[in-house]
Image (cartoon, rainbow, N blue to C red; front, side, top):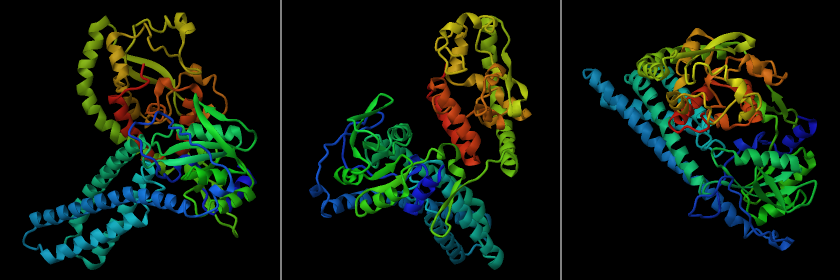
Length: 531
């Protein structure tokens, strides 16, 4: 990150450091057919100042965008209000059912009303329905949890001060029930929103500008966005003139240059303009002025966010926001909490695993009379070795037959993979498809060798080939699952696998772990890239 980047952020006063996390904007078209992956749309470009001179054509576009942004927020408001009312009513009913003698209808109604007002206001104050987090997943859920925690913290303090009857039951019933229901409601609406965006609705019509390399990088990230929040309508290049930019086989029209990008944004009625290069602060400032009154918002993209996104913060200093990047920590309270969660989850998981494991073990043993479990040396945190435990999915002499198959390797980078590996047994193929062979690794988690969520546990031979950057994967414990497993698994390239692991190592959080666990359960039911 250079001084120019910092000045560029200054020019806006409100810089977004990663385009993928920026505000979703609505689509201004109506398609009845799903848009293919990448959702690249081309529009005829009108030239000349006449197309951009007057406000009458721009104002309707801005109003349509605001209207369609309001619709999802209104749905969330109604859903949140209904859930809050039901949770508070359930708490009041529980209070009456457990203590009829002291229950006071008016008192319970007053406490319930106060709880509803504080809770609903807290959800609004934390921006849980803001377009910057709407449909984003972890960020939205985290805000909901923080808002709910603050609301009930205020309610708890009120109880301590005034000793109001009925508050305790609100904390015991409404808090867990309501928080769970609100999160489920947000998840449900997020799935609906993603489904709508697959048809082009509620997706930001996006114009990307900058140098060719930076434009291609940002477009690649936007096309891979699982929330489908962006529809790319064109690119405006700074360094050369060409008709198309091709990214991962997809063709994006070049509609102008960095000089004409504001005009093109008006003509295309773009919802957002992403600046994808280290252009000077004067350019950013003038572009923000030129986009005033249009339907477009200005977004700055920085590759720094790929590694340090959650650790980035802005600190204003006499009108010049300084970009702070917090140094990652690999010890402390957060890691203690992670270890505690590992122990609890592994302990609870091993009980049903023991029941499911019995028929699996029997089928493995009956197929070829070999051992049930497969043990292999892997490298853990800080380069320590441990024996990973899996259900055996290959023939007993699989290691001896590996050399003969090296020429047919389909794996990425240092990994050896074959989609149709002849060493895999029939029951092993089923176990691999649904990741059931990984279940014994919960014992490794309980022992402290692994974590539930983390980078892929590498072989010693792989670690010997690591360079200094890739070796950062060893800074935390490897995991049973991780970003690599919920993002394509064996179908990922080596570079993409490393990028995902490093991003997790640098930026993990408890909320991220919970999200990955949830996504892992879905991947097990709808497996992709598992072989």
